[in-house]
Image 1 (cartoon, rainbow, N blue to C red):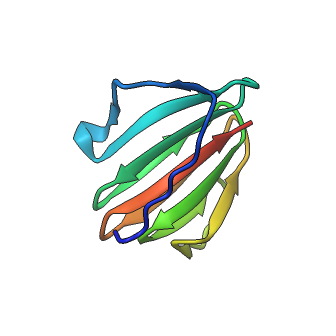
Image 2: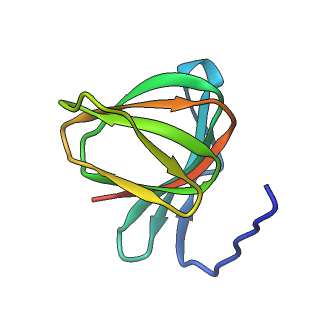
Image 3: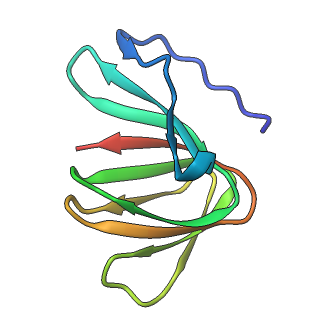
Length: 107
């Protein structure tokens, strides 16, 4: 990954990683001063199913994946610089063949 993003932020960053699916997805939680919640992480090669509580916007920073939202039959391909929306109380399948770096925006 050749992109580095640096931004001053007022808030809290969890230094303990969230590790899911036996290490196939690793992220860190961020809470901004206004209460906005995000996570930043990486998904390693796998096909996974994620459930949502709050609505999410998955912003891809680098990599390529295929996504199928709950109730859909077709996969959609996304690459770095693109994002997709996931409704609250739903789920999505994601297929990753090379590491995907992302920011997840909650709410």
